[in-house]
Image 1: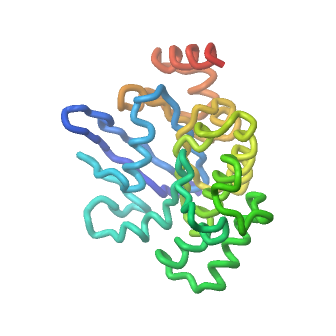
Image 2: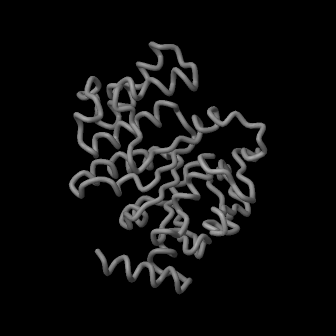
Length: 247
């Protein structure tokens, strides 16, 4: 069943006179893993921040299950609990333990009872392999472990969609794999994900849909077999050639 969860309609975002996003239009269906690729400065992270309402749209609309989230009537905290986000720089609370980081959002935003919140946090920390570290503070664990805690924290809110903003780009190369393994596991469970990434192997092997952005527009989108293997747009071909040459 191809149920539309998110619909981005004619989204534009301008900072001053600089148009970062221009008339962006695409749909995220239940169970999709959508990888958003493109050069730095193409608008990928801004798009994710608009979807999570961390940035205000200049024009356009975002629909969640067919209802506008940009009309001002929405409870933004409740929406963000259903459309979770994992950031490049983890955004953990340094003064809280790993377990407390995964409990606090449930308690404050979703008003989950204390024991239920703790139980849920432990379940998702186990899922990402971080159960042995529940009493550690973020400063005591590696970057890859921090990102796995951030994923567990987002999952503990039990969202319908998870947004990932370059989740491996702040990590040392040897830690990238452990985070990608968690994401692959979520994909195999049909978690709906929208991933801004430079990890082309992930985009090729795990995605159901790839969106290539250039200069604030979607230059090309489609299944990985089309966009990454046989792209139609010249800009996509040039990007992939440059990107693969760097690797």
